[in-house]
Length: 585
Picture (cartoon, rainbow, N blue to C red):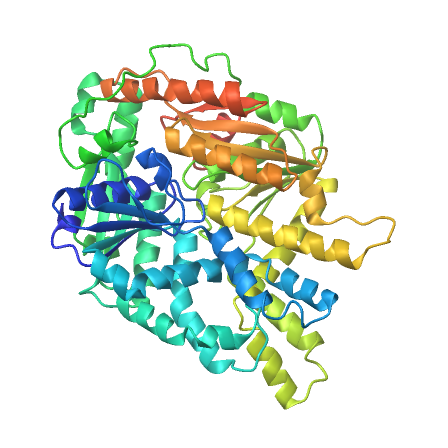
């Protein structure tokens, strides 16, 4: 493996959700530790599942990994980091300020921007902690899905600039003096990230057009930030020997993968590249991780032999039929990155539109994959995207034209500086989000939300807005906020999308718990791309299908009130006609 050779101090894995970053980072950490190195594995993902891979508790304290000498892991918890940050800001002034002022500051510090910056504080602490660096030969980062990773890695330069140019401005992060104290640490983190002698970036993709395009975009954006030492790993390729089974599904998957590799973006061809085959087993537990890079198959418990698990579950056509009965409403697809939310949102939208209902299909996914999936148009269907950059600029111009209209030069300059705060994007995106979902009283609004970490941050912004409106409207007889609409099952149907695999199901379970804490009850679970629901003769695919059955049973018996099962498709469901077929039209 080229990306494992002469590994530097810091190794980052990044890529579109679901490509195997967690598996690769965990297997890499185990591999380096077995070579006698002292290794720390760090997750900066708001939806980390490293603990599930190692089958042990980890959390936000450095924790030795059982059974691997020299290996420890740390999960940076953004919510815990935000709570600690709020306490650092508020505790010194809580008794000195009026209660309403303190409540106002708490609201300002309750948004997604504060959470991300607080987590970034923890991230930079790892990169620059001298004692930590002396304790470990390698620090391996299991980074978040691409959109969040790019935002996270952009923050060092963005905030260095913000601190330098906005010493007197307002910020959601509290007193800027507190940020200024971190200036040297931020600068050191930037230097470490951009030093090829210390940092290696591993782009992870599957042999699929969407993930390869995402890797190419990430490559260019991170290269501009100075992360020039990049490698590419294409994970989960169906082995050529599966062609001997003469199986239609295996042949189609193999054909699609080879076509995607042949059309790989030119910028990726210049990178050192490794190819990893699809494994017949799940990458959970030390036995699987230790054998990940070898051709040796570990001794694992036998998978379920029940051939009918999920055979009676309804498919996507039944889901669209049931949704049609309402005539309108908000439908939101949520789940871990890479589970197929974009495809299922598009399929449900075209299915409803084909039945004659007006439908608005929208995405808040920073990676914007929706236009790639819906290559065509259909009567009754409107498609839009909440573009964070465009919405931020629109919001800036609106504020400057209204609040800045009568300001003098000095006041306008102050306002412009304040609008450069990263929180401006959070506000702008939320305004667009709340505008779109209001249409659900008249038509179907289907939202393809971003991967889990970003979705939770977006919902956190919605919740903060809900609390702010409720605080200001105390005593009023009636008001409705977006959070209230999300909490109303008569108006909103939340679909949790997952795969029949251990880690996605665990992640979906965690998402459901987070939604319930916010007073939001998921309406159904969709198990997507199921091999167990398909007809295959491929030995490898049949073995993977057998591992799925335990997860399907777990979802329907322990987690979901309604379950819909969507089989893996021989042809990639891109374009209106294939989406209609997927939706049973």
